[in-house]
Amino acid sequence: GVVAALVAVAAAVGVGRVALEQRESGTPVAEKPWAAPAPEASAEYGAERGGSHYGPLGKLLLPLPDGYEEGPDVGVWGNDVELTGKEAREMAGRAYEGLPAKERKAALKAVEALKVKGVGARTFQDRYDHDLLVEMQLVQMRKSGAKSLTAFRTELLEELGVFRNGPRIKGFDEARCFLPPKEKGQELDLMICFAHDGDLMVTMTAEGTSPLKTKDAADLLRRQLERIATPGEVV
Image (cartoon, rainbow, N blue to C red; front, side):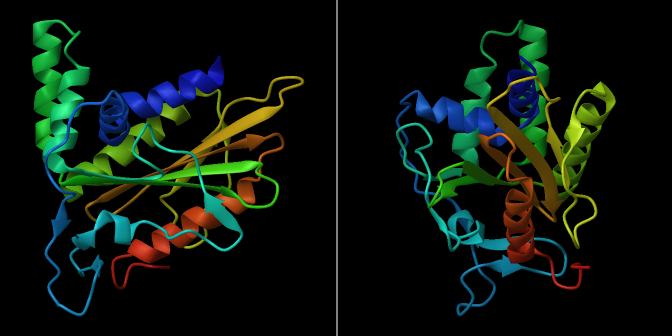
């Protein structure tokens, strides 16, 4: 259905989701999660004025908010996942093994060009009603790649012309949220949001009973973007 198509679009152009799905298959991982060196020993995470973020992606991800509890596991790895850039690139590469040689080479070249440094994901759900499930994902890469890939995903869904616009994120004009068209009698709904800040590409997926708590989900995205905001760039 349309919901499946929406998720597929996000997966097809999101290195992070491809990598996470490959990791779920049980591929052994030897490296520790990647963490960029912090310029100041007292700061665990943050952003420099140029848009480069430092610190573990687990620290850059929005912590468990009040009123929420840990969400379901991402595969067998728990509700908190961190991948190194090498893991993400290798696993994305394995996802392209079924492509013809020419297309596979082009896909691998595109992945390498992004210079992915790491992927982090965290899930949480409404503690009381369990009717809102959110996955927040950060992919750290070249700044130009984070910007262009976010724009590509946004434009792709806009041009399809079938998705509903989700709420706007106050203070973050470039962030966009989309929902599939309503279907009569549907009990579940889904929303996906795209944003970026410097070298971080942000993807949030929210799902739950219909009508979906889109404002609550949008508030979580706003808080995530505020957490990683490059100094001087929050409106």
